[in-house]
Length: 257
Image (cartoon, rainbow, N blue to C red; front, side, top):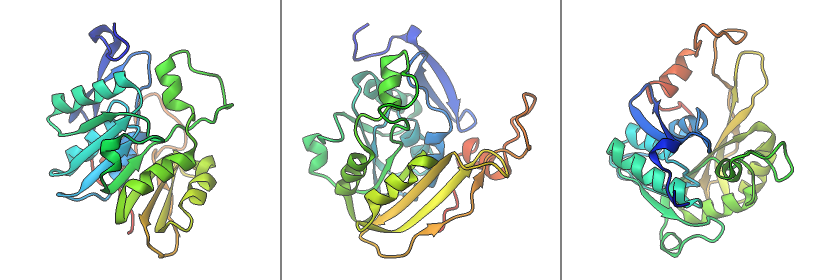
């Protein structure tokens, strides 16, 4: 198999949004779960607007957003050619328009440098250069481990935003300080939504949104609770009502703006 394309036997086809989207993902590479779905649900894009996803992978976040909001002009930039190809194939299979450009967001492709967008969304790698054990699969390792600092992701996103445009990110909770440092003085109307697995548990993820050039104070929101049962059960999915609406029905996250 050429390195710029996954073969059929290397893929699985998985349902997202309760099976409304059918998305091919590598068996052994980076596989999306709920985080890109939550990211898409948090983006307040409206029909007729433009959206850029940084590091779009197989396209899950952009396709979830495109399913929920019709009439978007969506673009994605992806470093790994095989994943960029897969995102294009997934977009075509699901009938959602998505332009995918191969390139490094830290050295933005010339075509994207000449454009600006109403929204930028991103799910930067969660693990630092020295965190944890490296993944066996090179594609998964590259997708999950930070090679480009979060500050560079934020710089790239903010440069591509129109004045008053919005950036939306999902990240591990322990990286919140890095996100806020990169947004400080350049954005306002920042909202921080903690995402906790269950009531009484610490948040593991945060969704951060911000508006370029705004000066409105930061809002720390009540956490989004994903599961209703106090402990994990193998017998039931036990999503809370709001989590089910977002993850299975493709509804928008009700974040105050």
